[in-house]
Length: 241
Image 1 (cartoon, one colour):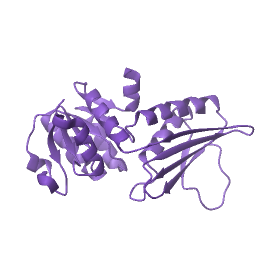
Image 2 (tube, rainbow, N blue to C red):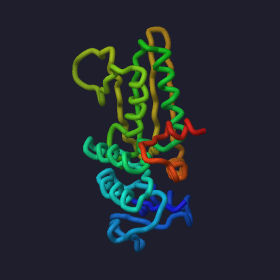
Image 3 (tube, helix red, strand yellow):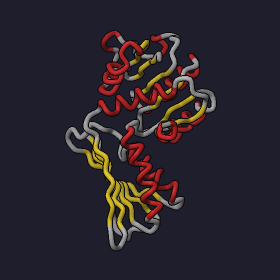
Image 4 (cartoon, rainbow, N blue to C red):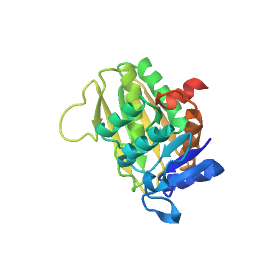
């Protein structure tokens, strides 16, 4: 596999580059440190199998344009995309293979599947999502929390997000509360609370280190090599196993 890493000088980018080793044949980072090109224009056209993006959601247009230009797959690991940026991702998938997930952890993918199953088994239960991350994270709720909500929505089509509940008013039947905590150096904790009148079930995933995400990103990149055009996610990887 020949990979280009965008955001190579960031915390995640460095871990991904270390995991990929000699498979990294190109790097881009907006800070330009360590003699890394700041833009894809500076990098020039490089023959690669996949472009991995762990920079910032605002870079997605450039990442996708470059991947299309060189005929590579794209792995989008950033979160916080605007509706317009998401539209770019979906449009690019009509031309090239694109992997897009709010979290590239295998454990989170399994959690999403379990949450969907539990929501189906308890159709009348109240469900709340709680996520915690370090104080430097800029988007809230996390992309993973939205992934969990979307998993629930697959079996509860009328479900509605209620992010950071406040003010007066009773909880509605269809709402799924999502609550974000920002604490110290927490890598990532996600809990889904499922409550009926007589019992409760809590499903939880906790990230031990960012190395877990780097490993997931590398697995996703390897999975994408040679794929047909289209949109892929962690469920695609689970279904292939």
